[in-house]
Image 1 (cartoon, rainbow, N blue to C red):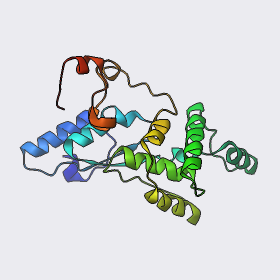
Image 2: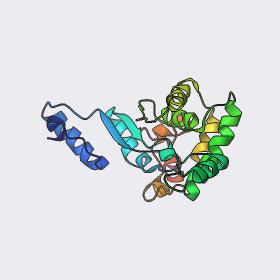
Image 3: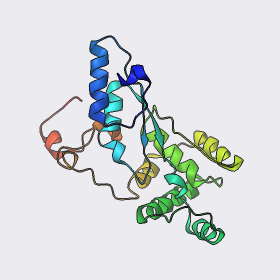
Length: 200
């Protein structure tokens, strides 16, 4: 079994769910942490993986939370291009996220970094979240530590979550998303809401 062998793979939610069910039925250790790529510009984990982690009581250790260094304001992107230190051009979504991060950072005040706001967002989105962070400078480490002191308001969380378009796809665009991750913990589906009280 993957847990017993120490394998560390990025696998689909259904595989982890089956492995955990098998472990439970055979008195074996279940997975307790899922590691995957998650950021304001890459939200795929929110479809199946994060709801699965919530259901199994698993933590998440997301990497790429700061957009692979692409969440920068336009002046910084220009400076890095001129210096030849920009690894890849930011996408349109990266630019939209960067703008939202900049606006929220200005609201928070104190000269907080965009990366700190991005880290604070993911930590507030899922309580058992332990981002995989990296960096080559002390200033980057300080920015990561700074995120621990930031608490975003519901409006700021919503602004960031809506910064870049995210297609939930079927069945979520039809039946709604996991209500545990939504404000107020209520379903965002007209079908579920019309059916009466549904406990998830």
